[in-house]
Length: 510
Ligand code: GLY
Ligand code: MN
Image (cartoon, rainbow, N blue to C red):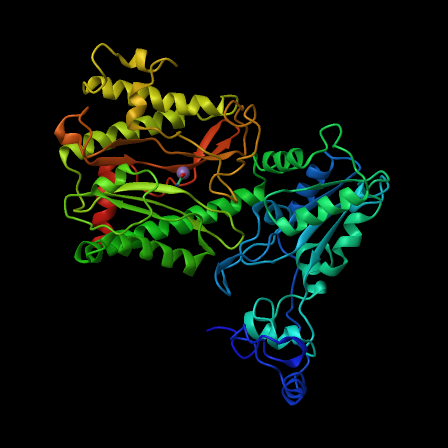
């Protein structure tokens, strides 16, 4: 389906070079813009996120007094030619507005400095949300704009609907330029979250240049804004935790669907695609999408950390590694991995490797408590991995686990080159712009949510290990909430002990 016949041609004439352009007759325009019933009231109500997003905006704005903060949702992105990817707003925008799914291309959140005490919640900033609202039926956009028109993408919300739903004053995006430029160079510093929308960044640059604004002062930089917005998400609020629980629950259901589909996967020449599409269908049915490309890796493919081609066979006797997450409509995602025996039972050597990874994960869980460093969780897992490799005689001659664990050693990491944990939230790798001292070297606090995902990966052509290990890849990944006195495994309902996995698979396959 293209927009042939409907893209308006300039001055009522088709361009010779554009095969899609057709003139619109006045008769057509008169007829298509008339005889429409009044728009139905959509009955929009305030989102449950309203008080939470207001608190998040206040915590961000208070770090940049006197600055105007610009947070774009981002534009539609071309997939090919005149077709776009499904829209997903930038995560910073989603976090601060509560808008999710495909809302709202080209929108821009602005946190505007105002006189102290006169702003939102009695503070010193006022939030405004610049959006492209639904166009009237007598506009060309209504019938002829394949990117934004009601005929093409459906009715978008009105300004009033956006205001009601988000609790933020919505304004027309056409007013953005003047709103951003006001008093810049006369006391107001303009900062933009970079990486979300090039057009908005270019506009901000132009306004700064016109105002003769010099280099930013006192940490008032775009980079500092991006960092602060990322760090704001290190500790999740109650709504975020509720949404992460939901994402995890939907994901666990998807894993069960995959177990039920394993016989079909074995029967298909591209069995990994059966796994991928089974999980992804569940994600679309029960959530917004997958939170990242599903990894469905059977046999040796499991030793490729981000195997997303998923075009291989699934054979009896293989282990299949499924690393997948449902992103719910608010855009929070889970990130879980299980490594399952296709037959339903682990072989002796598969179980040995699996148990080592599970023991590493358990050690990481034991380390994940308030006051510990984020890095302690990784180090606890690494200690178990190195010791098990030493026990199996896989470390180089003369290298003990203790030697391997020194910064100068690290030989064990040949078989696990990735980290054990990453923060999780709106982005699968959440808080990625946070400072090292708050992330890797940061101290755990209640409300943090991250993965614990150790693994062991023995490639088929790895001459450093005995043949029985070659081609085995195992990862076990859970999503963990730091609590006041330890942690809670949010994905505890998905079996991880090898015997429990076998029992669970049996119960699903009947
Ligand atoms: N689950 C994919 C990753 O953490 O990289
Ligand atoms: Mn992960």
